[in-house]
Length: 138
Image (cartoon, rainbow, N blue to C red; front, side, top):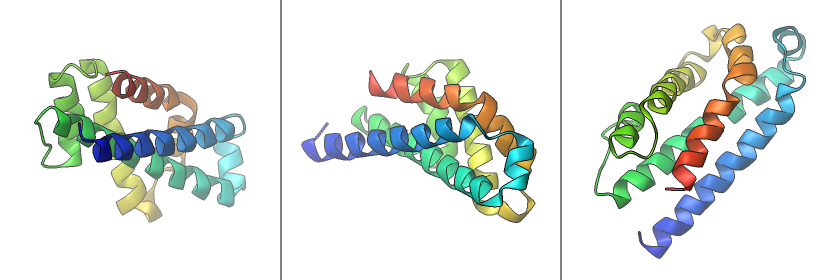
């Protein structure tokens, strides 16, 4: 891995870690009812999910490139990471679900299910942590 790539990878890991920390702070208050009653918080949570998921996929691309692999789309990244034994098949499946969630956040914002956002905040931050950890210790 070139020094520039290492620097870019470290920057993405830092951004992902920061976005994850923000989401963890929101997790303590982010019930569905709270998010519905506080739209500013809801939109902040949505934005931080976009940032954390995009960072995870960028991290994956850097790691794959270092191994001579290239995903043609973000959708392929989790499976390629599993094939390269960077993440488990289970984490790859969770990463694929995150890809779909990210697409809903970005492309179908006006029809996004706020219950899904609350679910991800409550139940799926550990998935982000696990993927980030697996990619960071490779």
